[in-house]
Image (tube, rainbow, N blue to C red; front, side, top):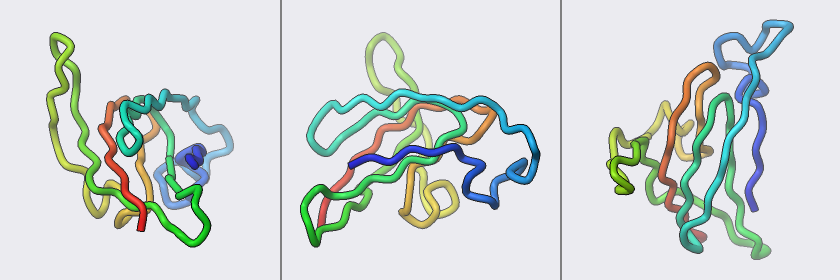
Length: 105
């Protein structure tokens, strides 16, 4: 299960206390059972297992780009970028594409 909400809902994001939030939006593409591409701006995305008693975690989250139809990985999203493994984040007023690999435990 995937849950998506506006990044400013986190409260600690810069601008979260403003009365008008910037537009946010994105696209999630499943390329395998445990692999997704996330593109957008201003989103926080969490993953959960559909199996009772199981949790979902991240194997990796890599920011990158497509060049000539080939994925080019950039920086690995760790700690501060994924809130210690809690979510995928695309900051407001920035655009990014991230390759997400998940697992259940």
